[in-house]
Image 1 (spheres, rainbow, N blue to C red):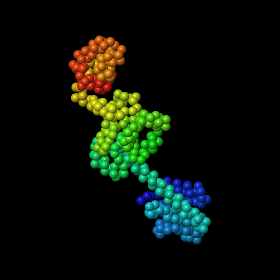
Image 2 (spheres, rainbow, N blue to C red):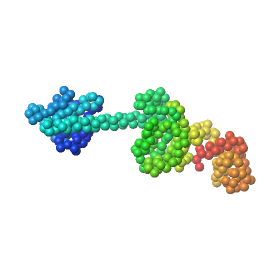
Image 3 (cartoon, rainbow, N blue to C red):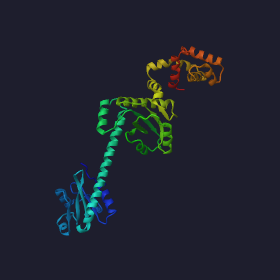
Image 4 (cartoon, rainbow, N blue to C red):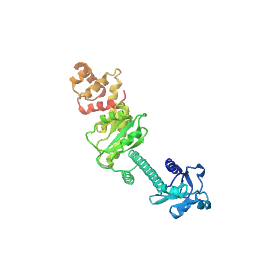
Length: 362
């Protein structure tokens, strides 16, 4: 059951007394005055309110009755209800025949403020629970059954297919305004780390994400980068996508710090390999490339490899891109093959250079 607190009680008093020329008191469920236009009456017991609480009805007190009760002045005292529960008492000071016409109106306004406060509290609770659920997507220790049960408990509406978007924010952004804009029907959004939001939304093909970024810039939302999953069909894929977006984020920070828009479907392998960059197997896989770069003091071989991979091994296009003769290109490729022990004509071995160059620092 909702309990009146002094902050809400005084808010009710201030709102009512801004309109009415009479003192207003608000008493809690024990009959203590916790909000009043007369500060001297705060935290005193109101025997008239106790009568209201005991009988659950309006109690009018005239001068004669006030003289027989402690802490009471003439006026009208009404029960305050929320969801049919008696939560306190509202009192209007003055001759009953004078203040009676205002009594029901003031009580109605007070109960509306109570209802508003309760709705705000419920929204705050819902927001807190949703944010905790979104953070749990990144925690492999939370099982899918737990995630599903929690989604049902807090009423997260999950329809499929969906898409996850991890947003990195600049410090000067407006996360509060951004949260409101991204929390529409069927969408969930919440902070998952400092300067990060996770946006879970229905999948929609044909979105112009670049235009959205430009719009966000114009509104001052401070979105630094978008990391997007591909299409997700169930909760298990939602969990895997969250973990994959973390790998994509680490890859982007290391190798594409200026990129503002990255799609998981286009960088899945690079992100996966970056996550395993310290493993023994991957280091052994990169060993041939390391041998080449160790003998490349001027950076010519790295530059040649990059052009060779970008042009998918076509000699003429590669030579033109480098601005060198084809014979010079052939010499460099022979030198790379000699140092690495790999066959540059084989596409699978070119893949090592394509991906490996991104994994190794300059």
